[in-house]
Image (cartoon, rainbow, N blue to C red; front, top):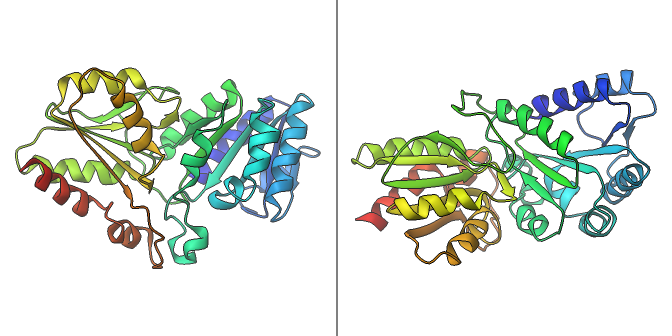
Length: 304
């Protein structure tokens, strides 16, 4: 996915001389073309995320569009005050690209896990939040975010994510349906959408017709989609590679809470604990209860 986002931003920069790119000592091979072709518009600011966001905000307030690119927990939480004050308070045209959402950097340990930042950024006025499911959607939504302008946050995987045909054209702020179904809807966001598809397969074997929806835009959330499914589904479940508090599940719950009637609802995410173990992304998904196997088993128990 990072190759998709870098390629899309690079192509946009060839057409727009006001597009600037700042990286935090990351992606040297990926950004070689930027260094070569964008003289005066590319900076490697090192591991100084507060400075990166400050630089990006300054460029934006000078009429530029600035992209800040680094690993998720460092480009979002280490510099949270700068995002809040320098970017969002000024409604600055800054696009933050976070690489390695969730447990993508699982082997690096808890310092590199990113399971809180969506909740933290979602409360900031003016901020848009996008979590694509695969490289194809990453390209399309990055193009749309660049046109819409910042403040915005794009949360992507680490690399080598599975690409597949979506079955819909991604539109910023509108949920997409990855698989049709009529009994219940699983709403997922980000790369864990592939796990949601596996959950649907497992439940289908038990006779359930499961819709899988991809809520790639967490803010602004597609409230109309949620309200529509609340009228016609037996149950709605959310699945995210993020804390169960404040992210996708929280956003969906806020919409459902204000409806006159709602179906059975359950959030699947990382519990309110520190995951102290280290391992692969899939191992950590399973350990925290958000793998396809664990989610499918839990839903079967809920519906039995």
